Each structure stands twice: as structure tokens, then as C-alpha cells.
Figure 1: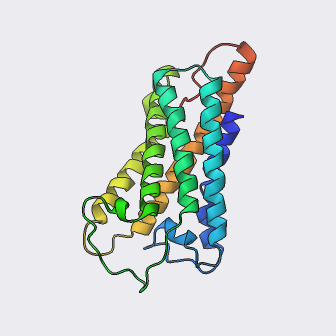
Figure 2: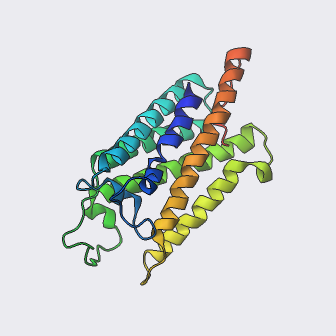
Figure 3: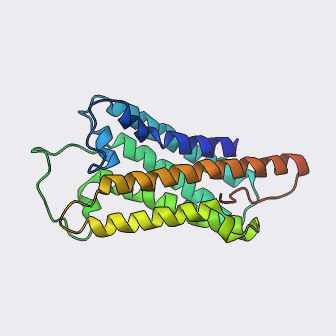
Length: 223
């Protein structure tokens, strides 16, 4: 159950790919994914529902994972991070970004913490921090408890890719010019989605071990 919930959350977190099939969306090269769910867009509800479903699945998976699997330091942090990611993603969907008037937005320097000036920016930041926490401790748990060779751990390479792209976004966002941040964020979120799907597969295997052998196992075993 937990594995299915986690993997499905990864799939629904990819609802943004529908922008390539639905009309009325912003330029995917330069826009952020949050712009897809701006209230005045025709298909905003599609992306809002996708994030809401993702959040619900992640919260339930995290809670059940804490209850079902053996508790170890890394796995407890991982399940807790999954709950936090789900809650932040639901808040992200319920508190969408509002388009500036005039559009595009004039540049405003909000200082070191721009999240304090836009609630959606805050929820998005919390969601990203939470899922990165899950990816880090989940991958570490898989290597430590599952005794997998790091070089062959797909989850580790996905984490590295997502981290590199995130650095790209953080640096480029503070520089003048166009650095195709829309592409960067889509690579980042795609990596997160794939990681969750692969984690779901791993967790399903762990659940079968629990059901068959009736022994403690970690559950949160990375990808």
C-alpha cells in the first residue's frame, strides 16, 4: 500500500507535462510551473488537482510508513519529510500564484527572504526542501540498510541531477538575463517524480518482505 501510494504520488506530481497538450499555458522555457495553476488560466484546475492528489497520497504514505515499517533514524526522518512534502504541496495547490498586473511583473527586490512576501513562494520552498530531505535520507537509507552499491543506485544519480539543476536555478535566478529557468525547474521536478516512482517500487518490495517473513525492515530504502 505504501509503495503504491508513493509511486502514484510521483506520477501525479508530473501533471505539469499536460502543458504540452493543453492550450493556454505560459512559455515552458521561461516560466515556472506555478504559473500553470494561476487562477485566471483555463486549465489551472487540472494542475491544482494534480498537486492536491499528490499531497494527499504523500501524507498518507508517510503516516502509514511510520506505523508499518521498522523505525530507524533515517527512515523516521524520511517518512516525516514525506508527510511535510505532502502538506506543503497541498498548501501550494490551495494557495496558487497570482499573475502580476501588469504582466510580466516589474522587478522588485524583496531582499534575502522573498518567500515572506508571497505565501505561494513559501509553500513551494517548503515543498522543495521537504522532498529533497526525503530524497537524501531515502537514498542514504537504501545504501546503508539495503547495502546497495552507491554507483549502481539510480536514486543517488537522480538526486545528483536534481541538485545540480537546483544550483543552476538558485544562481541564475539572481543574475541578469535569460537562463531558461523554466527548463531547469522542469528537469528538477521530473527528477523528483521519477525518484518517487522508483522509491515506490522499492517500498513495494519491502512490503512483500514484511508480509512474507514477518520481520522488521526499513521500508524507506531509496531507489
